[in-house]
Image 1: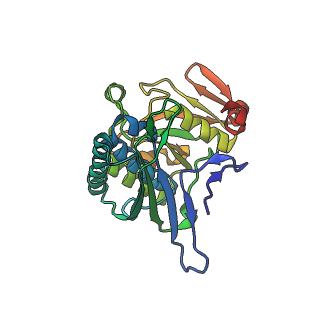
Image 2: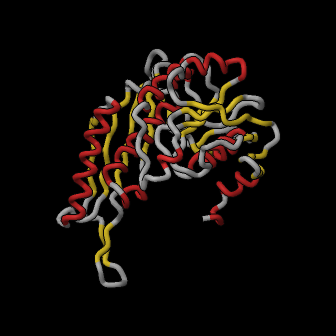
Image 3: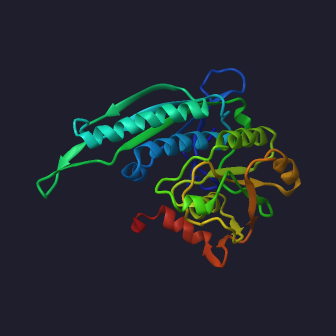
Amino acid sequence: MVKPLTGIEADAPSDAAVIKPIGTKGTKGIVLSNGINPEYGKRDAYKMTWSVMDEAIRNAVAVGADPDRIAVLDNFCWGDPLRPETMGSLVEACRGCHDAALFYGTPFISGKDSLNNEYLGADGLRHAIPPTLLISAIGIIHDVNQAITMDLKEAGNAVYLVGSYQLPVISDQSVPDVPKETPQVYRALHQAITSGLIRSAHDLSEGGLAVTAAEMCIGGRLGMNVVPTLVGMFTEVNGCLLVEVSPSNAVAFESHFVNLPFQKIGVVTSNPILKLGEQEIPVEDLVHAFNSPSHL
């Protein structure tokens, strides 16, 4: 129903996959998503765990999963746990799993670990991989026909940023916190999706808002004008998504987010150019950069 790559040329990254098992009755389907960020593990294993839990859940909700019908699985990839510092970060990650699961009301149903991931370097010393936790989420979408994708759909549609984005607070954090209202934001987003008010949605993760907007433009081969705001274009956050809404549905959409953080930050354009304030990038260049290995 929704594949890992989507959009009009099937070359843009989906937030999650939507599957309807063969032979099943009714309209229910399964949503599969992931969250991972080893860079955060280098800084704070506890906060990394919260972040990747949020990313996995956020990705599932972005395509239509019910946030109250999601379970998760863990995959710990760590160094030698006999090292005190390695064991300490592993304990902190486990503590994060406990706290985040209770926060979201999302149970762990399985998991695995891969420890002792170390190698002998050219310097003659043993080196460990960064503390890394992969969270996989599995959720229920009640009607697969209501699943949405991340590619922009139509010029003239409004683009909203939903979720708490407090730049002065985020800029002081080595790993961004998960805002306390995040579960309520996801429930409101799910209600808007099931009400047919959202054309596309994509989560903010690595690279921040600018990368999210670029990927949506790549998927739809359409442009986007993003107005200058207090939002940092490349600031990474948790609990935030970009959402495309038709003008006729704007009032109804906004009514779902009363007392929750959201802001209108842009518009979809037929001219295939991504405008970030005063900066302009042709979508053709974005497609080439995304698909060409020469940029790696």
